[in-house]
Image 1 (cartoon, rainbow, N blue to C red):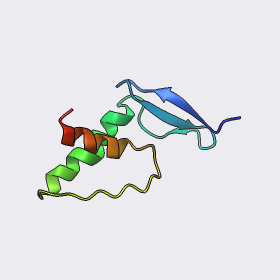
Image 2: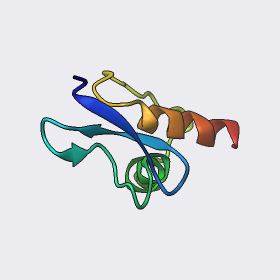
Image 3: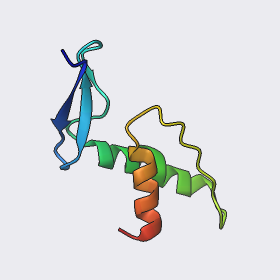
Image 4: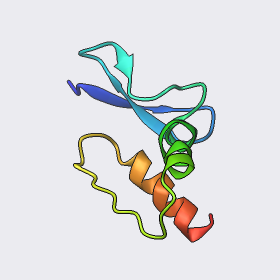
Length: 76
């Protein structure tokens, strides 16, 4: 039996649901992508005022923070 299942969020992105912990990785109402943008990526730009930013992704989660950051850089 799988420990996780995919859940569609209201913003159209998917998050994981952990059966072991009975918890979603992201808010299903806000959505995984929107949560990453508004809780992590956009606030980062409000405190970091540099022309070059280095991001370290240790691949612990689902990758939405890195995806959100690269989407902003590409203007999408």
